[in-house]
Image 1: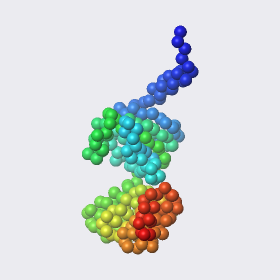
Image 2 (image 1 turned 180 degrees about the horizontal axis):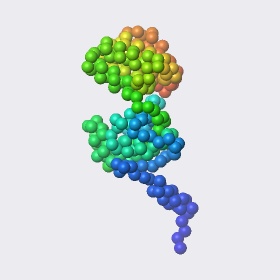
Image 3 (image 1 turned 90 degrees about the vertical axis):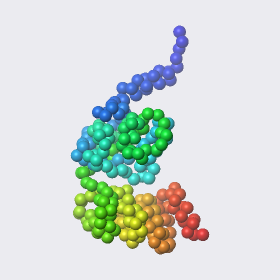
Image 4 (image 1 turned 60 degrees about the vertical axis):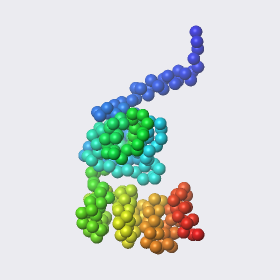
Length: 252
């Protein structure tokens, strides 16, 4: 009789365990619980802070919040039906891996999906960090105001929303950073700098916040301020290649 090494049996048992742990959401997405969370369940009337990444069928990471070290924020009610069904199985502190059918993924991406994706699914790994009240994203509000009313009303709206104890919007680092770039792309440099300064004050240990502020100062022609903030960004994150590159260019 052929004898199999213990490793063979261990592998078989792990495959059996994997199949037992794989579940399916109401939208038909297979998923695994990579880390069990607490008893608090994410509901559709909440918002969430999470780290997540999208991975193609070949294991290539397409996008990841881990890469920038800043969590993502989403109103659960604004997500697609498939995403909402995925949220319903999440617990606070848990980590999950979902297989999104390619047809679902392309429908959610609305034409923005990368071309020539391999396989028939995309992997969505998500770690639920916080469950929050359903506050609107400040960047979406400012973008709408900017489009409808222009730069000055949009900046006045920003100033009103960030007043202490306002608590009317979500003021995450990434979302405020997007507001800064809304003004920067409109060449409203002083306003962009004000927004980035606010973000730095709220997140003094963020390399990305300092990097964005430095970019605005550089575009405004304030070279010394730009250098100072790029150096601070690099101090907080020695792997910030963008800061290294810009500092090398401006110091020539």
